[in-house]
Image 1 (cartoon, rainbow, N blue to C red):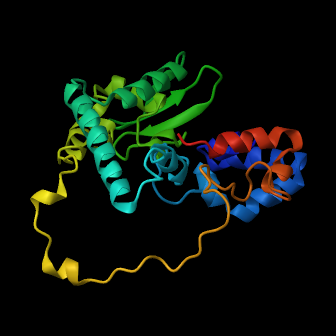
Image 2: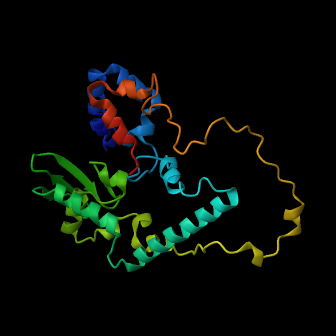
Image 3: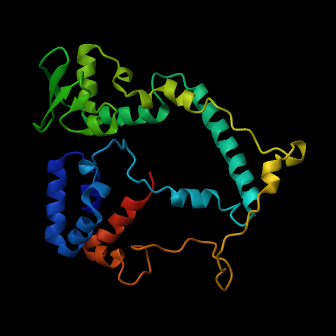
Length: 265
């Protein structure tokens, strides 16, 4: 129920799932409300988040930097630079090999969206608008000029939903023309146009005098006793925390759903 409420596109759908959560577990509903509905529910998020349901990249970065975290600061920076060089080169080559009118990941979404509307019929309203009637009688209004659909999938993901694709087929409009600029192949190529070069040997360069004159002191901190931790310290709501949110979300399977919600896309 928690995952369904978080991923719902329409406010009406979110309210239905949230009401079910409140009925099944009032304590779980209070916890989710305390977090702030806009922080975890797609239907109530006021800005553009596309298909990104998390803004916390710390977990992914910690895993990527695990090989260099024990190194001194300068070696860690070289590790990051070398890693970014590999990443940018791989993504640049992949973007340059693309010959389609949209990126491979967007093409997968378009294919799935069109398959989900199989069996629907279309009623034209105007040269840029149409009504899509689903196989079970559900109706959705598409406004191609505004790039909107009443199902809110087009509005939120900025990728044409199946209803918009059916309307585009009727009007002879290409799917790629309905994408926002940030999702088009040309922008994908431009993103990795700049080069990130590997680290070079510092002995080949002269250090500016101003750098040598600076007196940089180590951080005024005290190293805690024991061996340094190699894994992250669990935060509030993680497993093993007494009185954490996990104990609240255990009821009616909410814990598993919340764990899925917090996984990076």
